[in-house]
Image 1: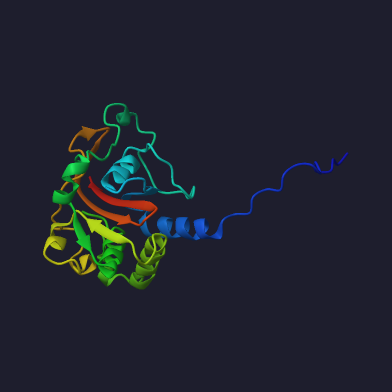
Image 2 (image 1 turned 180 degrees about the vertical axis):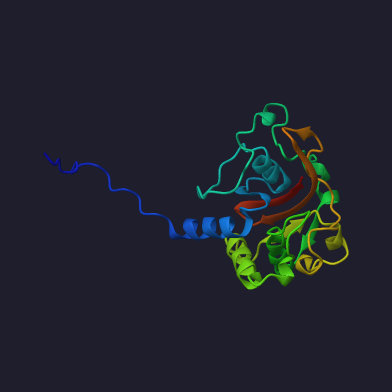
Amino acid sequence: MIHSADPHAPEPLAPDPEAARWHAAALRLLDDPYVFAAAGPRRHADWAHDVLAVMHRTVADPRDWPGLDWDRDNTVREVLPAYPFRPPAAAEFPDRLHRLEAGAAVNALAVMAEEWSSGPLVRFRPDREALLADARTLLARFGPDASHWTNALAAASDPAVDLVATGLKGTRVHDFHTWEYVNGLDVLEDLGLIAVSDNEVGVFWSFGAY
């Protein structure tokens, strides 16, 4: 016998096309290298507190859009709650981060598609324009008035620095990660990008590991 659907059951929610676009761009751009990508609500004038909440996974994406987090369920987080981050205190963020112009932020995010130790540089890849388009899709969520910040030292003297032109290898940074050797993963380098709007923060971080 075929049973008809319950006429009183609620209609299933239609998929959110914006969420699907955002997640697809994140997967295409960042799923192969070791990258953390997540968003959280902005609740403080000093948004460093909101970024720390994202790193510690104590807040959820305010739009319920899926991000990328290889270590959410890692048992190491019982000892290092923000793993693989060991971030500074909020008061230290101004000494560790440098502002980026919008175009430079797109390039910083696109370069995270590279591997630290090997692999073709984004500027030489045939899919370079597609990578940049995905980076723009991820950052568009935060709006045209968002501010962007990085731990790359090159941005201290040049907020328009082109990290695609230089590549990940050799990029000097203020470290935000743990140097602990845990579960066979020795994290060597990190490159971060933070997007800040009036309502949200986005945290994108690439980790080099052997």
